[in-house]
Length: 211
Image (cartoon, rainbow, N blue to C red; front, side):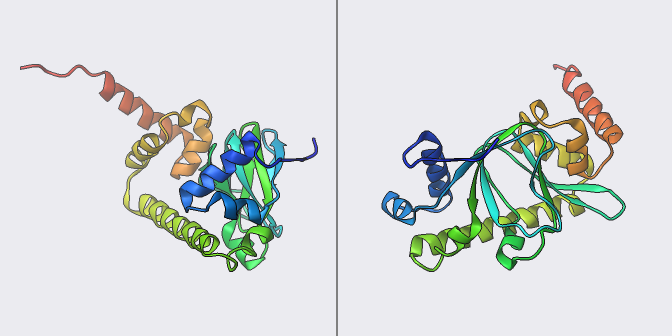
């Protein structure tokens, strides 16, 4: 299915604006004046948004579904670095900035609807208005914090703690993301994840002693 242009003042247009504005305030006047062109794209399960080793030019806003960002090694091993849920933006930001081939893949793990735009349009705005400059800085800050948090979890927390934290942040993740993908994100095998879940369920179901 071909992309379809998102019209100004449509519900999809407002959803994107509200998400941008919550990240870093951009007045409606400045937002409309910029005239960033977004198009609606549908992805089926397994479809790529960005492919590793291809130069990316687009970023996207997720309306529905879930995508995974992951690295694929030369031996075919997959390492998931993050998931992209509805209401979030996705794109290989570092590679978009450097205009280098992507270091990761971004792929749908459910059917998805996303709004796609050219990163060049957004980047050209960073020097035109203080609101856009702040947005660019906020995006970079958030990505740095996300990367630091991810590194801390993998290096300092055990697998059970990482799983608990994931469930705290995304309580309903298991409704849309398979155990295989969750295990890959946690850096463990599906068997190890199953053991952790069984242990936590036993603990949850265990009656407490009352004095």
